[in-house]
Length: 136
Image (cartoon, rainbow, N blue to C red; front, side, top):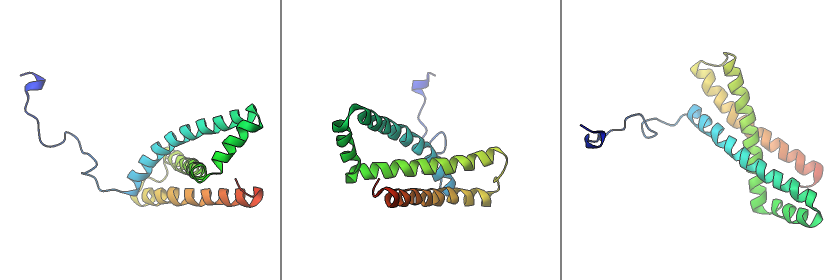
């Protein structure tokens, strides 16, 4: 019997998201991949900013005007949080590669440390930037 003639099974062949309950380890794994993509896109935007800076004052004022807009602030804040999360979670992965933190309790605790640590690191960076330079 050809593959196209086989009757379809109503059940999935492998577990899907509806089978699993959401856990912090699962979310941090997904977020790590997502923040990697966001970092690539944000880095392209940063490269555009550097090119506009090199192009002259008119182009730079257009880019900096966008960066100071609410949408620009949201993009920069999201990019900086992505950087912080990817950094903290990457350190967690390096420690796991060294053989540390494999018990379930430490795995869950370290996942939460990645989430909250990235939020604290991002807030710290933005507070320092806003107080030192009067606005990022």
